[in-house]
Amino acid sequence: MLTVLIRAFRVPGLRKKLLFTLAMIVLFRFGQVLPAPGVNVAAVQECLRGKRTGLVEMLQLFSGGAMLKLSVFALGIMPYITASIVVQLLAAVIPRLEALRKEGRRGQAKITQYTRYLTLALALPHAGTVVSLARAGRIFPTCDRQMLHDQSLPTVAMIVVTLVAGTCAVMRLGELISERGVGSGMSILIFAQVVAVFPSYLSGIFVRSPFALVAMLTSGVLLVAAVVFIEQAQRRVPVQYARRTAGRRAYGGTSAYLPLKVNQAGVVPLILASSLLVLPQLAVELTGGTGPVAGWIQRHLVSGDHPVHMAGYVLLIVGFTYFYVSITFDPVEVADAMRRYGGFVPGIRPGRPTAEYLRYVLARLTAPGAAYLGVLSLIPVVAFVILRDPGTQQNFPFGGTILLIMVGVGLDTVKRIEAQAGEHSYGGFLREPPAPGKP
Image (tube, rainbow, N blue to C red; front, side, top):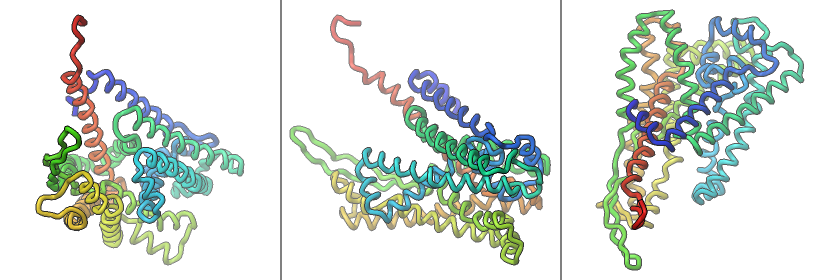
């Protein structure tokens, strides 16, 4: 990776994109440490040093620590990610969105605009919930300090507006990175959030058990290698294009392949399952419930090493994996596109038989992909249970989500940098020769 970065910085255009991306990340992190107006910074810092619950750890992970500090960018990119996933799900059931998705750049611009509106709609109740928890002192149940200088309604409304505006700014930063930087803007920002809190997880584990930290770092190398191997694994379906003539030029007559990844769903099932599993705990925190139902939730769903929690987590991951793959990859659409361009799978007739074959192959790939995500999410939990150190387990409440985000986004970014650096290298060979008499 270091070699790729050195090559990239030697290319003027790519170097400019990399520096722009780094500048946007710095601005993003600055907004995550800048407290919102009306927040008692001293009280927040004191509460951060205290004991944390599973809900607090979830907020710490998905916001890069910004939500616990009630910073300007406290909501991070989660409202936008949630809106994007919802729009993708709605596209499978709303014909209008499906038609826009097929219209190319113009339709994609419309979908992006709808995603922005939905992000704003989701950020408003999200910000209200966070400020209400801070106002009631339930973000840190073990800390009784007042996190807001003023509990009045105007101050609360001002903080809510600030958090919503911060979400819009984060959304724009991600779009700028995608347009003028390197890689997917939202993926880069969520990568920055996870990496920002990762050192605090390591230090917390070291304080509790140095042996656990050494064991985790040793096994982490093997885990990263395994994740890289599976993330790169794909089934290449051979595609043959028939030779055709248009005017005086001949097209086709070539062989290609359709790559189908083993982990076709990416990290989305982990995020959806984690978010859904934490909803009962969030409801208990908001209502302050103390009845038998609240007690059952605390015993079975809050503790990450409980069998009910682990079984529910894995089942949700498997279900969301199959569901997300089914709405993001349409075998009928792919088969129709292949037929329009004269492509076919050797031994399979074009049209419906090709779609059925692709559906069969995808189902065979989704099973190991879902199992891989389930096992990856449980590896840290099982490891900490074996070490008999439940305190360290809470530092990784979402299992392999951190690892998958870091490796997946890192691989994708490196591939894009390599592709752009390769385009520059080939550009030197394909450049037109100078005209006669000119240098």
